[in-house]
Image 1 (cartoon, helix red, strand yellow):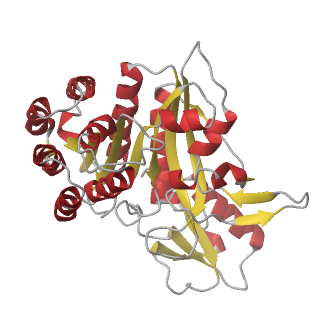
Image 2 (cartoon, rainbow, N blue to C red):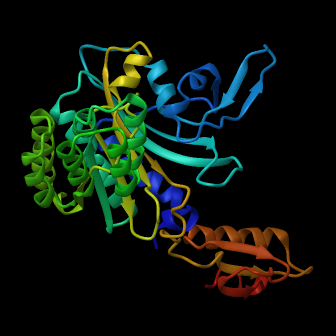
Image 3 (spheres, rainbow, N blue to C red):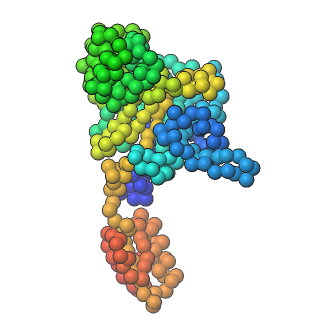
Length: 368
């Protein structure tokens, strides 16, 4: 029996697999404090999954925050390098509200960031590691890929005001074609431009089904070529079956550009992985480097990756008042040395399960 599965939760098991995966590709671990100065998050609330941040004032009078995000910290505390791409991964807990729940939660998060003079290989490496990360969770998983330059081009061609563009982009994220059509009509967008956008939003599926459509729509040729090259790389890596193109995958365009993606595993209704290229965030924070990365959210995975062993211990060793403590300790150590999980108690604990129950008898100790 694998000792890893005996003592680790599903989250810990997955974190171990992910850490091994990232280290194989040369990513170094980034460690950070549980809290940072609040101003790091105050100016970038739109970048955060939840704008609610837990704050407190330290003894020096500084307003601090329990970290709701890891990427912002990495961007702030890593410098630009022209000679190499910085490849970092992390295992951290973040503190924020989740979904419709108004209470704060501590959420375990694992991910990686690739920062520096990025090229096509860097983007492909991050995307294939995102796919491999999903496989560490479940073999039944999908990575959905989108390109913000394509979305921006087709939305920009509508010729509608900036505020209307924001509303349209929200409709794209929700695949709300009815409201998208209403907004385009009300703002005087051309029929041809509206139809092109509708066709893009409606298109989702395997790359072989979607790429031919992109070639006939007024999409930026460079962006389409990048998607084609990434699809080629996925197929060469044996990951092509996991990949889908879906242009409802949208991250905030103030911070993200180019490739964005989201990962799903069977049994979890929401995405468990999210990422993309965020050169605009880098620029906003005074950085000249490019950057791409993703995060894996581990808070909902216990229900799909249960512990393989359902017992609390292999052996429950019951003893009474007459037991010699030295002999009992010797027996416990002997059982543990044989790889058994053993618990010593006077009585059988309620609500716990054991592989077997033994009564400690000093004369029989060490015989089995």
